Length: 312
Image 1 (cartoon, rainbow, N blue to C red):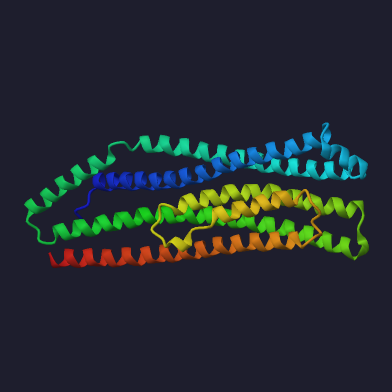
Image 2: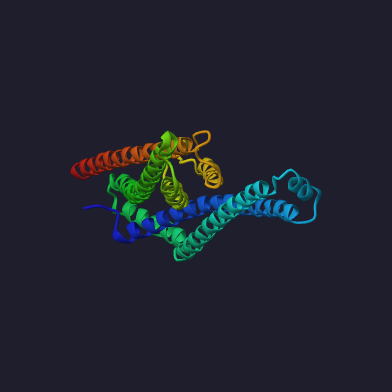
């Protein structure tokens, strides 16, 4: 027979859930600040790039100069590409910001449902301790503390499983991005050795377009994974570097509008995605280790309770 009743367990689970949701909310608010800043930066970038186009198309000295030297079409093409890249980055950042906002509102609503649970748990726990002391069982107070630790660890295991699911999902998307970049690189190699043409060019950019969509999707998956990690007691180096990946994604979106055969941009992008994939895998491995540690600790605590009950 144990001292930790169902009411206490339910209240403790609610307290743990509320803390977990608050940790996720804090992480999402951090992410929101990043995306909000990105939106502002990309709006300014788009405005600046559009001004350059307007100058070339208007009655400016640069307009006359490039017309005289026969470079007007070339310069306009370059400026149009920069405008297009700025639009893609802005739209991607706006979608990510909207997704984070939606998740924040959802978490805030969930947190409100747990209002007052801490006070209720403290009161119920104090009442239970008083009952245990009145019962006069020497081991009662110790068993109560051990069962409280077990309940906390069980709650942590639930969060670890949710983080593992988010990690595996992000890893799957990263693998898909790598596959698309590998395909694009293969078509690019074929193009460089003389097998190029319209079909080769279209095939290469088709895979790059798919990679672009998946990279934006991966951004969202990484944000979710990072928020799931936020409420688990782990080392700081377990965190997936979202900020660094955002900088890479911006570079990737820029690259879609230039000649990808120059400088090995496809291979560089692949290396960057592979680095993120390795971070995800490392985090997943550590989560599995945390799960095993929690199982071992729960087993040890239950053994202590059994020993105390036998001695009582």
